[in-house]
Amino acid sequence: MTAWRKSSHSEGGGAMECVEVAELGSCRVGVRDSKAPEAGHLALGQEALADLVTRIRRGELDLP
Image 1 (spheres, rainbow, N blue to C red):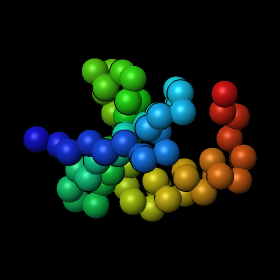
Image 2: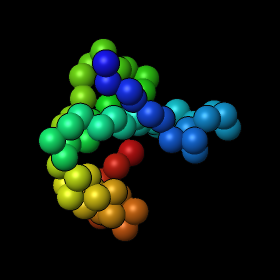
Image 3: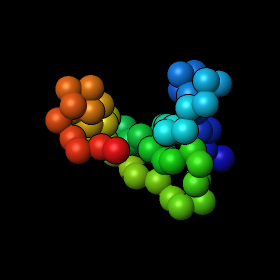
Image 4: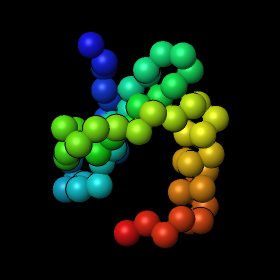
């Protein structure tokens, strides 16, 4: 069974935009919406996930 983890920053404070991550093996990481886990997940390589996080932090993506 896959062990999904949610950021401690998502707990309390009314945070509504939450993601969960899980190690999927073969150097892959799963990312899913914590409010809709039944909708599936993205499977990313570790480098792709690191790049995504960097781009989000820099504000390079048009995110709501």
